[in-house]
Length: 301
Image 1 (tube, rainbow, N blue to C red):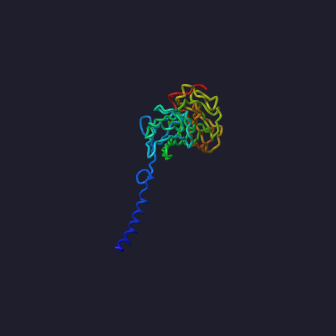
Image 2: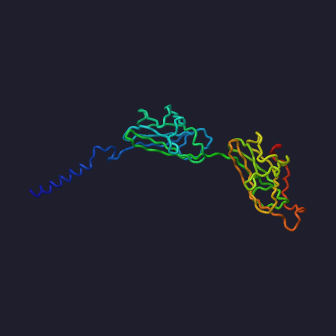
Image 3: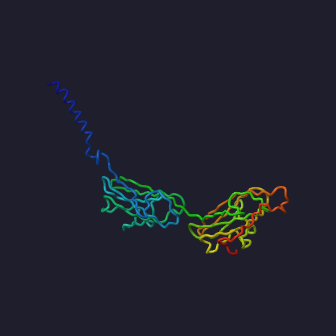
């Protein structure tokens, strides 16, 4: 009996020690794990719920913020743009709550909510902006969701059209004095077009070197587009560079819209005088103006 008692007492001590550490009434959740809140972005018509591109000119965008509580009731929601709280003037809670940031969660929503929030404006810069939606509960446990929006700005489009005797891309010019013709198509996905310019090696060409087909020489460079041309236009142009030396030069055709945003296209032209024949009598390779009417021409400048 003494032998049994001698072994029974240590086993009993070990049993009590194990259960005293294995059971902790002070911890919450399952198995002692604290359950914090959860937040996510819901989808829906007109709702942004994933990383996306957005026109910089867009007045606003809408997100649907969904949150659930954990071990403690929800306390607050904070909305940030690039790490900074967004001013309340830029937030509209479409369910009727008065905008605050952070906003205190009312008791009726402390167990969970879905808020559709309209965020107006942006940082005014093109490129990505990160939006953070942070939910905190009454135990100061928190969770967050992020969304990246890449703000883009549509630019005017400039295209050199392809046709016989017209330059539409990189080429070698063997004409007298380097004269060449182009047909230019301007379009805009955004604001109305305002002006058009031609550059040689990054510098504005003199207006005397430029002329509009059937309209004569240009009086300025850049030229101001007429109101009816603001949505887009097409015209033919003859370019007669003052620089007649052989070599390669870059020609840039640039359109600018009413917001000052520009779009352009460039070509590399290599100029070579025809060998073996006096240039004064050699017209081989001259790019004459293409025959036939164009869809639309710029008026007198």
